[in-house]
Length: 461
Image (cartoon, rainbow, N blue to C red; front, side, top):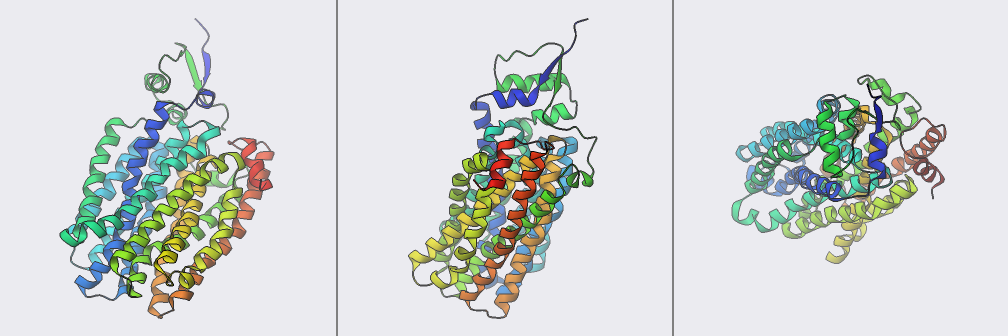
């Protein structure tokens, strides 16, 4: 009997050139996650219309905005576990189905309590999509381009987040606020079907879980038509330590403790500030006597600025590690703090400041998402990212609630955004620790990512 030949899947992926398979997956994932971003932002743009129709105080929207983010707190680790146990593809389809259904039902709500409950359940689906689609794209990308591919894919969420503003400007005047949720509910249901039918399962996941050989070979040949796969190949992933199942203690073992804790703090701080800004921006600006259309454009530019930030950050993260994330935390402090001081002086300054704020806050989130995909091995990558997203949601829930309290206190717009910059100060301190812990771990040879990444992160190059 012929001796089995070892086939290193990681080396196969890393040695390949980026081709149509990779770009097809990134583009497909871009459109899937685009509706995630749309869904997160839709409630904020519906807010001014709901306040007028339901005759509620603007601060009452705080729980409704936070409810979806609170749902993400549960959805990320729960469906992250599903992704590591039963597959990224299954978890992505389930997540998209969940938030599509509960977003569509919002069309028939008649009060703030119903809206709050539905947003919570939609948030579970939103939270489940994020870690799994990040893991899937990271596991198909060569390590030299891993952060770049993840970030380009994740730009779909910011592009999608910009669309509710356009819908609010062009369609809501004719069809009412309901159109925001018709779009945000029906189209994700279509995407869930397409994911189930067309999206490939992670090759590394199939190997780690010892799935049937035929599935592995089929994906290998789809990635590289004509690829030679030995008939008796023993598929392995040599550059990762193997784990039996998942245990939360894995997130703190093998030198990961300091990295995991500081990564979580960075997630909390950035998501707190991001949702503080995004969740209240349309409502705060309209209450400052700006037209709804102008407030909607500001929200749209905030998201588009984030898309630019993510694209600009992609290659530096691959080549220089976490240093760009650290610097962006630092730059975010004055940018966000000055929104209230400069934003109301002219329309041009307002649009500039919110675009820069989007560039910083969303650029940071792109970087942190990529970091979570690079830090953890295939065996618990979805869980690692899922826990980071889940813990980070404490910040995303707190951001809109704190905003509601400050608005209820009638805090001037100028000082409101100074408060919004405080999390970035804490985040910058944590980012320093994250880069140092990351460097030390990979210098010790314990990690799963490449040494250049770790060295660049710690050196600040």
